[in-house]
Image (tube, rainbow, N blue to C red; front, top):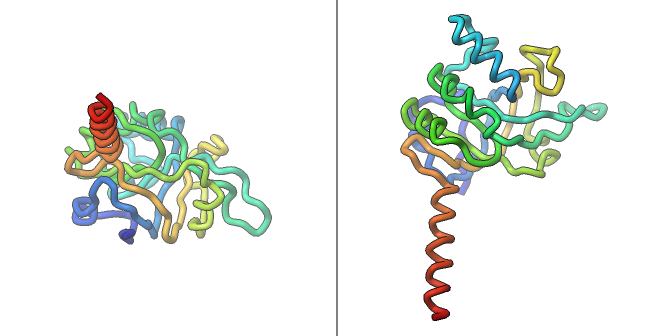
Length: 192
């Protein structure tokens, strides 16, 4: 069963999410990658406001391809989340609630997610054209000179993702690996 959630998110919604949940996100999400994260973090460290109100927001790690005529955006698949790990704890502390990407997160990011009640979600790698269908509007809101790495504001409807890290410390990837190790151990035991 898929849970429908709306971004920006509040603590109550975040607390209801569990590692392994399938979600469909509607509302507003932002797009930002390495360079944008670096600039936002530096602005926060200087005591400046980020280019958008980060509190309660969702950031999607994505570099869009150019839109074809008549389309809102080109392929919109996720990029590797680990590239943002050095910046994410600071953004989470500033109020960021959800991050969407692909791949595992560092221990520091997972700790910040628990401490500040957030979540990390995975989008399906290789499904950029499919994901693009859920994007109804896309506008550059900051750092336009960065091209594909500019910060974008997306309006989405039923954007598909899976909760990987939840606010209670649940970790879908670790749980999956533990189950695999257990099954592999059981198989080896059966062979002896």
